[in-house]
Image 1 (cartoon, rainbow, N blue to C red):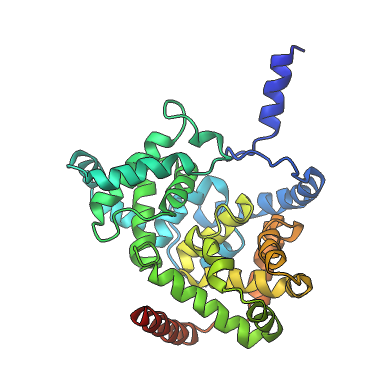
Image 2: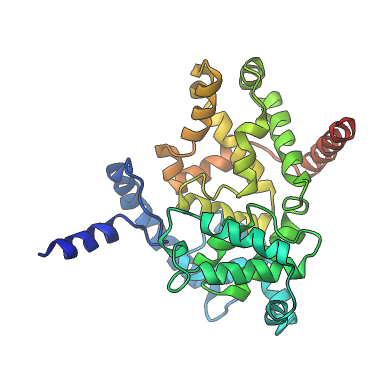
Length: 342
């Protein structure tokens, strides 16, 4: 075997099916152990989804569908199901030609420059976002430019490049990715991707309130060292755990996000914190705590996406919508009050 062939095989071996390079310290044994179990789960879920769909390409809503989605949408159906259960597919169907018209209209040069600067920073560890000719950078640019023309209020906000990028990897279609971004920013995550990031800051404050109530020792520990929850968890919320958790785990979270809304983001954040109480409390310095919050998203528990998602609905406990809505209103008011003082 030639050295070039060996190099190519090595490169293929070190890149996952979504185009993400394995890190140097990637634990192959841990991953292979997980996959040996998960492939059985995937096979079983694929059969169940095939039976659920039958000759249809639609599932509607209901407890059975919700249960199926929580257990994971098979990759072959994932893009279509995200479009359907989120309502993005209906929007796309009702607006034929709209996406192309957004690309054809005049563009805001200032926003174009912001997008141009951010695009090369998108998933630096993914081979699809390195080349304008053969990769997805041109498609990503198109989706973000179209969105900036569609939603003048948001235009472009940092973090959207990661969201649109992952949507392109899964749907492999610009227009589908555009309508999913539109639905996320309008219906599922209002005020997340605005210049003031009010939705993100509110949800971080909600997370802190829930931790204070359910895991007071962690809250006191963080408070003692003068750390803010914004510093520790903003990236979790702004990129919807993409670039934070392993890709298979992120996709399982997004399955639920497109069906259930942003409540799942809170469940995941609470689970990450509460499941790692011992590690957090053992971190006795400012920098150690920051590192701990980074490491808990990369450990073996985070890699096993199936067990992780089962824990999300156990560890996080009851999340009544009315209670969460009330907390959000209180925390939003607190964020706005603090802003007025500045």
